Image (cartoon, rainbow, N blue to C red; front, top):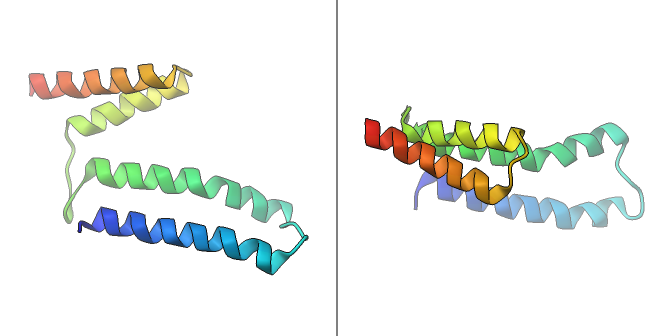
Amino acid sequence: MSDAVAVLIVMTIGTYALKSVGPLVLGARSLPVRVQALVDLLPAALLAALTLVSTVGSGASISIDARLVGVVVAAIALWRRAPFVLVVLVAAAATALVRLLA
């Protein structure tokens, strides 16, 4: 099992554990506004970190290749609010073009 898969499994179990323990500990009370704002941002931050690690990580080193171009193009398409299918197609095409030219 690769390190990325192990990290993903541990993060998944941790996320479900936190989500299930939270209501038991808090009961009917809600979190403070600042803490809730932080909790709301955590899934996006974790997904971005996992995407970056799997894109540029190659074992114990950093590998800059066509995958990074695809992720950057996808980020630009998402920023421009393109439909998800178009984001995937444009990112795949950009990655394929860089691999063809390299």
